[in-house]
Image: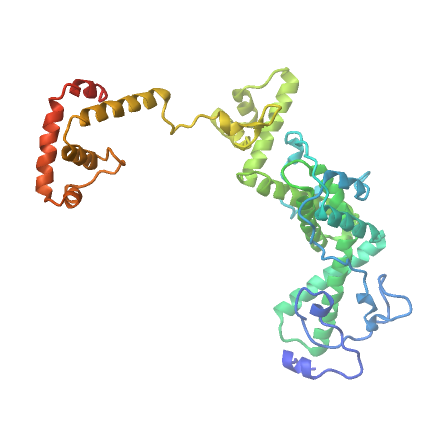
Length: 426
């Protein structure tokens, strides 16, 4: 059969087969890869509906959540966590490191300081929405090991088909139909595998409460890690999907905490260094019974004491100036901090005395001379004027104003209070 272009595939639809719904219509996330018909499939998969064949698109009738997968309200009171599904990680075997070659190094949050206590939040619409979210994911049936393998196989086949369709835009019409069918089935299997493990994300998120992100933010980031785990899962190694996905979920939450939990963002590698310093401090405290010095910590980490001091400084969180001080909460921290720009009491008193002496000296001058001096040096409103501006005010030339100024300053130098005014210059 000769290759056909995309236009030829669309116009030469065999009449004997029902048209397969496009990817955009079924999944709602992308336009169809190819518009063609689906050939009949004799053997229904584990997700097929009894009594119907897969050529009737029975495979696509997979239960979906009523709400979008990742749309979660922004805040949740801690007491709602009691409604979360039980921890699915109990007695879970460790995943050997060789099956995780592409997972980025996880930020070591286990060595961070103890979580800060959460403040009780009042219930509201967001709390009700999250409660509904927990009920929704709790109703989704779990998968058996065989179903996980079958779904993972279809996801892998769908990803392979997408790569081939993207790499070879001109394909045989029947081959394009087969690849399009694999893409649709792979995406539906991916969604089914994700939805069946959403409660795993909630279970893992409970371990990271109080470290800078809300429960809902942790669930959001964990869901992204779950999606990545579905795409990278290798069913041929024989491990449960939940065992493998836990590492990706924790990695996503750890990265989110490193990037978003601090008021001033610190790079991830610096956060990891902070955790190493904190871990060494705790170990030395347990071994020696006293708070370790900067030099001791630096020797353990092969760092300079200056670098350790810098890391500890970066680990400090900023404190709000509106933070209450004391039990009454009527005084904030900002009320106790000195204003560096404010004048001291001594300077304020000296300024008042200077003004009194200046007014006493200027009162001995004539009205015109006093006005010229006040405008020239800004004694009235703090804004000095030029000779030309003062001349326009009095209706004379700038030279005449200069003469008046010079004559007035000569009088002030010989004034009885001149020595007292010179004392303020010292």
